[in-house]
Image 1 (tube, one colour):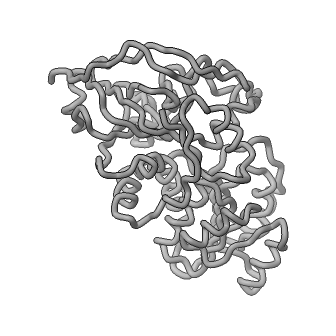
Image 2: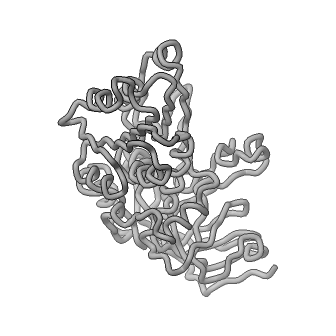
Amino acid sequence: MSAQTLDLPRHMKAVVCYGPEDYRLEEQPVPTPGPEEVVIRLAACGVCASDVKCFIGAPLFWGDALRPGYVQVPVIPGHELIGEVAALGEGAAEKYGLAVGDTAISEQIVPCWKCRYCLRGYYWMCQANNIYGFRQYTPGGWAEYMKFPAGAINHRVPSAMPKHRAALIEPLACSLHAVDRGNIQFGDVVVIAGAGTLGLGMVAAARLKNPGCLVVMDLNDKRLEVARQLGADVTINPGREEALQRVSEMTAGYGCDVYIEATGHPKAILQGLQMIRKLGTFVEFSVMAGESSVDWTIIGDSKELDIHGAHLGPYCYPIAIDYIDRGLINVDPIVTHQFPLEQYAEAIDMVHSGTDSIKVLLVP
């Protein structure tokens, strides 16, 4: 039950968010572990689209009467993380099966284990909602070191797994959960809107479900090429082609069976409602940059759709680790750029532009 530790430095470099477009590279104290806590030295941490939406502001910070602001500042961003165990608090080694020097990851939410959702096994919907990189209780991975608090869900990762692949475990877990929510059946025509990191993970995951036809839509031809590498049967660029007509022609006018929205753009919601067949399944995953208005008659009286949300990657981390480790899902084409921590602003700009990159990593 004793603690284990390497010789930790006293201070580290970290990116700190103070508000929209107010991010600073600072010197911070290196965290030390308490009972059942883990400190890792970061090997890599991704820059997610939600990180960029946090950087540019409004919805995540200020919110509105229905959806209050979520981000607590100051906070170290980053939730797509991987690192090497540098210190273990009392009881942590036994609880998590970890040793100093192991490669480890922590699921992106740290549950309270006390609320209704946690007590019923729905920990990813925890009322406290402490997600790494957005809340002061859970500083994230845009730093040299970080702490997994007591109560975190931690996993050991094979040490031979290259760190750029291991950094894709978190987004792949999210993609796996979204695909599971789609309840894909043999013969289904499945449409995935958006070929970013999460959408491409969904493509690879959906391919393993063996649908009748897997269709991917995106405005970026380079991303569509990666989608084909990962198993897409048909790719559509809506900027050059009438997507609704194409899918209608493919399905004898019925529409697709499953539509998974992974663009984060409100227009993709309306497109999906129009594209999907009666009694179809619509999965919404994205963090939206703004509100969307649709005709709810389509959902109810016109088509009687199953509408499923998808949040985080519950119970999917072991599968994501295993599938990456065994090569069942190839994440190599998804990781396009790596930057040192000092170039965090350039990394954010690259993800925000969305033209030349897919997954961008910060490497401390």
